[in-house]
Image (cartoon, rainbow, N blue to C red; front, side, top):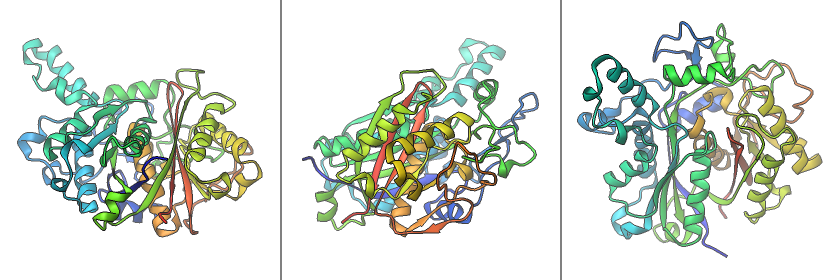
Length: 412
């Protein structure tokens, strides 16, 4: 029996809001963050839409001279971390520094910096490449930078497992605290990959929606007429804390993180296992390790990307695991509003589940208009639902067949 782990702080930078309050209000009102790409001209790319972060000023969190050395994904992640640490009202001086960790996830890291510096090399020559190229682009710069700024010397590294990256980071952080490796961990993930090269790569594999004439309706998880996901950017950061420590300092506790499951499909580099076996096993492992039963799960924040394969197979995995109970579970894909934040998605969606438990309100799956016979569960269509949720799952699945599921429950 290890230590219990609770969530005491949260922070977000997303296409639907750069604060937790704005983010949560957007989700409940069904507001989409998808619009035409502004970061570059996608004139020769089939997809013209994305979920870009709006009105973000890194100077609000980082000195301008320092911000210029950091890729945008690190700026997003650090800003979310500042919010989460402030929200937790925690004084790190009261804890041995080696007992405070930072573990985050990113699928692609600083690809924007890599692309920009490659162009400089081609146009001007190798000696003009920035000396900050490598520290700016490596995915582990986010946990490294947070640790430097706050003097945190506990477990510190980055996880990269495609779109499951930040869910893995949260799950591993949970295990570190449970095992006594750390008292507090700053965890979550960040991504900023709306760049010409990255966007073209996803486009050419035909993974992205081309519903360019209706940006806000393009991400439509589980709807029969879905045609791919919408690439987005942003960050989500949570403060995980040993329950005894949180109680001793009279901390505000959002919810308890109580279970983590992780598996591999061992099937294909981009397509999920058609039987959904790995997805089912990840959810099952998370529930078994959480101390709750399947009957206690009332809500699932689905991976729900809006691709034909993912939504159908995730539905199949949920039905295989829960049987008849699957129809009673509220499911929603908040990617219908945020788009797909790739490696940061799991963290933003774990924060959503945390807020669902705190407030008893379930955000909808917007743009759900025509049911798909192969997706026949309760996806909480188009309007939020009030329901007390005692326990829920957050699912994240990634290219390469990476599966991660997290159980969060009401703190009692």
